[in-house]
Image (cartoon, rainbow, N blue to C red; front, side, top):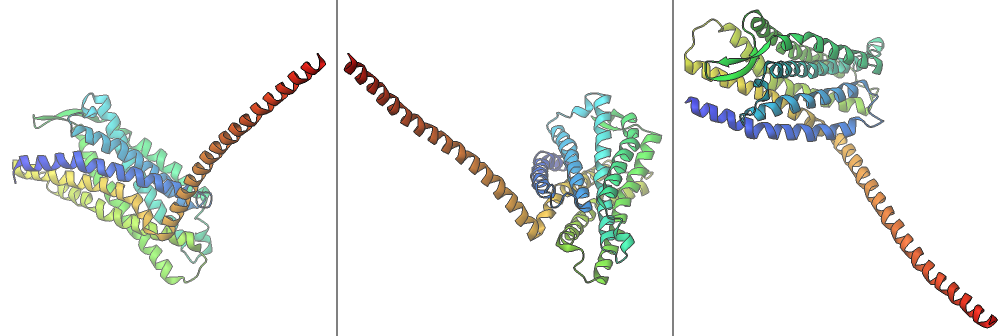
Length: 339
């Protein structure tokens, strides 16, 4: 396979594939937020996790994916200066980690709520979820400061500029950290998800209400998509660490770089498909239709009332003018009689 063909495929995926992912992610996330922000849902701990999860995912894809699309047209702002490079690397790392661990905590919340133990179920609360969200955001904002201070623009293979981590200890740290951080969310989600399914099979009661059932179904779909599309990156990072010190040909290096790009592209696909999982449940779709009909109905009523008010005012003005003319004629007639 020639280098030209691989480069062309990669360029087409950036120019065509990524914009499609961005559009799907934005539209589906906005529709999902319409439903989750309703008064009947937004106080549920699991829904709170989902709301912040979708918002952080939106920030990630609207920043990282959009900047990648610009790079496909030779307009990569991250290589303009070391500061731009540091900002891009820092935000990319932060908003890659935060949604992943929010999904982990969502699966933990479902494990709590499906438990037969009353004390464990009580851990699923609004206060606890808000506290965990704040801790996750602050922790990753501080932890990934290394990406800001140890990123720079480098000349890769003497051909092109690239925003990457400095060679040496920072590069080695990022390699091991990337591998560990890719495996931890997948492992925790799998464990919590399996335990949730066990709890559901053990307990046969309607205590959890239909909302909790729907949220559990949505979460299982979210975890499945996450594992399927994020696992390739984890496997590639494992392979990369194993073969790091082997001598490789230029063709092998080119193929490995292309495979790495595909694993990153799968990550963008996961972010864009994740909100669509919400539409997998019929009740969610019905709720979304109800909200949209309500918004359209209010708009129609508002426009109708404005038109009606204008028509009434027009009619009143038409009635006032003849009355004024009649009054004027009566006054003139009286004046003539008096004379």
